[in-house]
Amino acid sequence: MSLKDKVAIVGVGRCKFGENWDRSEEDMIVDATFQAYEDAGIEDPRKQIDAIYCGSLYSKNGSVEVSEALKLYKPLTSVLNYCATGTEAFRAAAMSVAAGVYETVLVVGYDKPKDRGVSGPSVNIRDVRDLPATPAGWFAVCAQPYFEKYGASREHLAKIAVKNHHNGTLAPESFLKKEITVEDALNGRMISWPFGLYDCAAQSDGCAVTIVTRADKAKNFRDDPVYVKAVASGCAPNPNTDPDFDFCRWKPTENAGAEAFEMAGIKDPGKEIHVAQVHDCFTLTELLTYEDLGFIEKGSAKEYIEDGYFELDGELPVNTDGGLKTFGHPTGASGVRMIVENVLQLQGRAGERKLKKQPTMALSHNIGGFPTGCAVAILGIDK
Image (cartoon, rainbow, N blue to C red):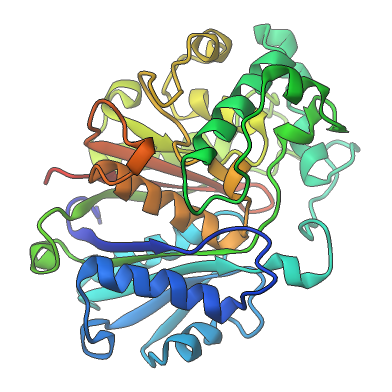
């Protein structure tokens, strides 16, 4: 069943992302959700919200704190697909509305990893062909084959970091608000070659929320709803055991993108998508995604990066709020945060980040699994 134009987003909210030592999970959930209530004009959520879909990897009580924080005791579904958790929660909510199970649903993505007492994610990824498998180490092994085959370099990754840091300075809720130069990025402390400090997204605390409803009811909430064109989830063989994995592409992204484009009726993503938020856990991941989603031809990213194609004033702005690089990555929140940003861009409400050319179609992309999954959402303002 296609979701196209059966579901609409009528309210969004996100709290301040960062090292929120003075805020509990419940505090962040309340902050983001009440923004979304106000945005949708919801005055009595106990009557106007039918169900809750939550995405959280590190929640203390399996997302039960969402109901407790909001005093909203409705059917509650917890969704998990590692880094793609937020988009997967949104997908489940959208499907429930499209299927007629519920009319109006609250989607909450959140995590507070800074309270866990560790400096990074607890990821149990098997070694990649006997190479180390920390997150940075895992994605770093894709760099050298890509560099050798297509001629890209650390300088191109640095330009992605510079772009995202700049965009993040314009987003009120972002964690890191620091302009950097290519030289700063190249001289940053090495984490896992070719990734220096500025090539890597940090962990952070955060929450983002959307309210979805039936498309035919959306204008009861607001005059400018955003319609769901597609939400797709893709998988691929574990690269550790896949003899066809060449380290120059991400098969789950290709598979999820292909399903989403078919659902949305998109033939030429590079021309029909006007703004995108992609999973920039590392700068190379963003680079590969440009190509894996068909925005540009395989191997051509370096030329487009040099031309500023993906910058705020470029032809296809990517990570307009600074992405994971400046918001950090509270795992369950990231996918929903991307959707929130796309809604703001489509409605012309992105403040200093507002694009010169008003977009009408937006995409968000979450790599998930360990790391053999991916989720893609496509939104539009025209029905």
